[in-house]
Image (cartoon, rainbow, N blue to C red; front, side, top):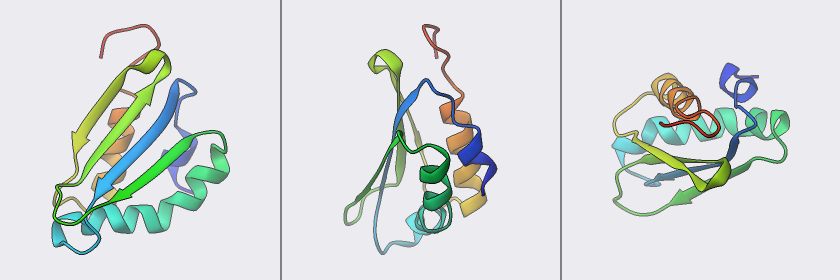
Length: 100
């Protein structure tokens, strides 16, 4: 089970990943989804974890927190471990009721 799956705070209500199904700049995101999705969902069954594939888009991650606050980051040309690190930063970037 990945460390990322265990460290998602309760304030995180949704994680959305947008990436291309075929392009090289989305390869790390695709690998992350394949290897980490099962552990994320088993550790956080109520978390909305959305995967959005589209042709020729730049990979991005969006995290929605309590009260509708959102943060996002670019994931282009990152390895699977770098994607995990960026998502970790993103989910911990905002505290409940505090600024980003």
